[in-house]
Structure formats: C-alpha cells, structure tokens
Image (cartoon, rainbow, N blue to C red):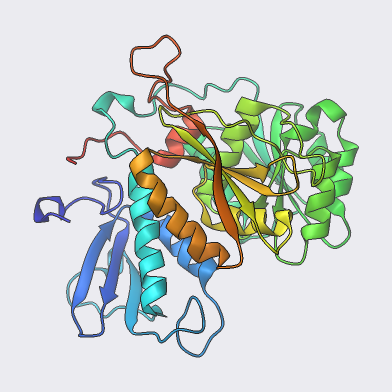
Length: 365
C-alpha cells in the first residue's frame, strides 16, 4: 500500500483505527497493515473460524508454518509492544489470507463517491426488530452489532413461544439443535411468517437446519456468527421475502440478478459433499452479502456480486475452500444496467447492506 495511505485502513480506507495486522515472513521482515474496527473484527473472525488442529500451519494443519500472523487491537499496536501469540501459516494459507483481504477491499466500495454512503433512518418498514432464539453468548454479540448498525431493536429469548410472540414483523435468528428445536420453531409460525427465520447452524446440527429450511425458513447461517453474515441475511430476507426453493434440497433458490450497481455471477458448485454441507462451508467464508443457496437440481448455487476483473480471484478462493474434488462453473450472469439507464441500480445501498460495507469514503485507485 502506498505510504500516503498509512493512516487509513488497508482494507476499506477508513480513518477509524481498530488494530493492526502483522505478518512476519521466513526472512524475518515484518509487514504492518492498519485496520479499522470493522475490518479488524472481520479478519479476526475469519482466522478464528478457519483455524484447524495441526502440528504446524494454524489453518490447514498440514503445511509448514513459516509466516507468523498476529492481530493486535489498537491499544496494543503501538511501536515497542510485543505482539501476542497469533497464527503460524504455510505459504498457501498466507495466500488465502491475502486473497481474503483483497476481496474484502474490493467489496467495501473503495471506489464510491463521497455521497454514496448510508443515510437516513431505518428504511425497512416491514422489519420491526431482530430476535435471537436459543443462541449462546458466542453468537449474540454479532447479532447485537448488526441490529445496532441498522438501528433495529434487538432481543434474545431462550424459548420459542416467548420469541414467536415478540412481533409479527421481526426477523428471527434461531439456533439449530439436536432436539430439532429450530424446525419446531419454524413450524410453529404461520406459513406467511416462516421466511422471516434464518437458522444458525453449528457443525453436527445440519439435520435440524435442513429440516427447518424445508419447513420454510429463509436460509441458514454458519456458527460462529459474524456481523457480516447477519447483515447479509437481514438484507436478503427484507428484499426477497419468501424465496423459491430447490425442490431437492429445500435450499433457497435465488435469481441471478445484478445488485449494488455490480454484475452478478451465478456459480454452481458440484462436490462429493452434500449441497447443504457445501452451502454451510461457503456461508462461513464468503462475504456476507453474497447469496448462497441451491440451483434447483440438487447442487449449491452461489451469487457473487463483483466486476469481471475480480472473478478470477473469486474462483481461486473457491478452489482453496472446496478442494480439488469440487467443480465450480459459471452458469449464469447478469450484467449491471449501464449508468443513466432507467433500470440502472444506484450505488446507494439499503441500510442493512450499507452498514456492512461501511461508511462513505473516497479512495484513489
């Protein structure tokens, strides 16, 4: 990054200081990247979720860990402070981490004009609040942060009956569990309200989450939650209502249409894993506003919003996440309407999506 930008977040160019990413290579040279609070939190979440048990590399568990990566909160990132214990990464996992950072930089609207940021009050009149049902202390902070970002009331409930009576226009985030409580909660709602539910699924609880989708839940999110996952779900539920369903899997079937003033690529993933397992993996690591569902034929279908020159980086990232046994094909494309066209989408985001992308700023290319 140009030294003129040393006072800005390396990902989104915000002035806010949340912390610093330090990368020390094999030869001992250390790279320092300043991060804002939102980007620091995103990267910390991504590395924590990706971490694996292994004798060497902290992420894949197989490669030789030769790069020391540490995230330091702002209070600890002053010169002279000793970095806390972080991660040891192999070459491949460091490349994955850099791709993650580069992808986020592209998606946080670094080329927006100054007036294109979020403004005004919460515009989604159909949503009266956000309610967490049966979630633990690890997940609720992300939901609370998302609710605060969009100005929506937030409440938590330990039981389904208490939650379902909160408000007919609330969005519910319900934890999947061995007793099928998420499925039971969705089934307890009137059919016209079931699409207001997103199921939060941890490893081992896929059966409950999949059954809840069949009952009419809008989508599934991957635990542990991130703020970006929650904001993306809020935006899709409010915009799409009850989505069509893949008849073979019960997964939402999203139409490939451009949004945010960007083209949309429909990527079909064929994998030895089930479509639901693939969706959970991708949901954990993809950007919060990218849509993940089914293709109507039993495969996973991902909607990625990006410019054409960014697609190769997206496909490389898919390859690292899914492995060599999976096949990813571009099966649909929706071009953004030209600027000035009556149907051209404005680069002014809905409040939920705007809260994810961050505040307005102008950054040199």
